[in-house]
Image (cartoon, rainbow, N blue to C red; front, side):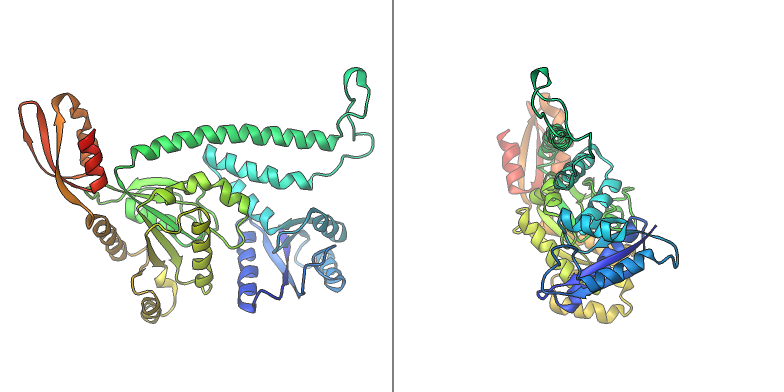
Length: 412
């Protein structure tokens, strides 16, 4: 399936940012399996109120769509959020489907959602996006009989569709609330363990790093938004206390606000983590903008103050690794520069994470009565057990643990 990309450069957007945004839409199109045949760009003070681009560029777009060279064009992708009327006018002018940036991202999310929670979250945002874009049905189908005895105009088909969507959103919201309660229960069970959340721009290599650090078979693909569900796994080789690593949904520039809000429960892993490992694709020429976007989204969800480690990944793809590494460390001296595909780099990150959490550990004793020995597994997971002795009524564990964990166990 072939498509044409349309983008307008507004005065507040510089050339570099504009080029990066258009290139990113190309990658989003590829993730959907679309071949971008042509790109139509224009500089304007504002988007044209009727059809996004001016009349001259609209004529060029019509010509491109109608040309059969290389095969028919079946879609127009617009690198902006556009109004329903702008989309309709473009569709009338070109005769093909028109998708704005939000619609493209939503379709990718819809295809990649696997868990019940992710599917429900994406469906809610998709339905909310659809409501203002619903159109009245054709002649003869626009009304239902109203009221008792069929008197009155009743609801139009459009109103019925909107009500069905509202009902469906309410149903999905209830389902999500139930799932969110389950997730909160699971996180409560993990509260005594040290937690790291991998965050960053989409396709920065978070899932590859997750697999390398934990030995888990999480889904990895060289495409945008390959991961939508939070996966939690223990660091391998195991540490004592245990460190849990979570992989989260990736961010992107101009990420629809509804999607950020919708995935809030998923991103709560980042909020409750003791450390955020912010993964950046060092080989991407626009990584600085991606770093900024990630920081903005983290601030939006309330995770801006969580301690953070910058992990520059894919350094092996930069072309001149020594020079790139030196330049990165000159600007971000506390960062780690690695390739998730090199065992020695993964081991270095593993050691850094273990040392980060070990620095806050304190020694103490936990007294566990013999009738509560089922807690041994939880103690060994949440603490480093240095020794144990047996007394008349209890086992006393000599441990190293976080002060809050030690206080909680001693008070239980």
